[in-house]
Image 1: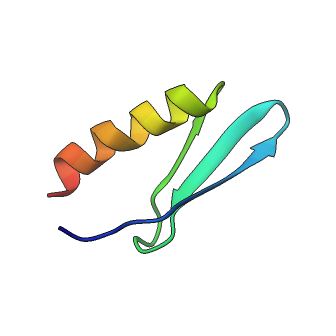
Image 2: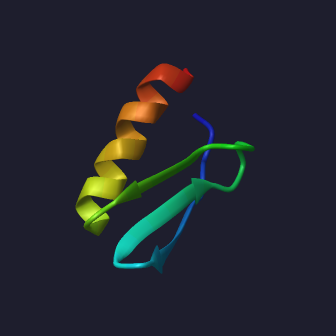
Length: 47
């Protein structure tokens, strides 16, 4: 299984994140949990 790095930062009250190893994959969430959940969903399609 490959390791992926989720990098995230706050922007205007939202957490914005990207997968470092996958170009162009960005997402946002109101909380760290919602951002993490979004990326779990994205990874389900990434396989």
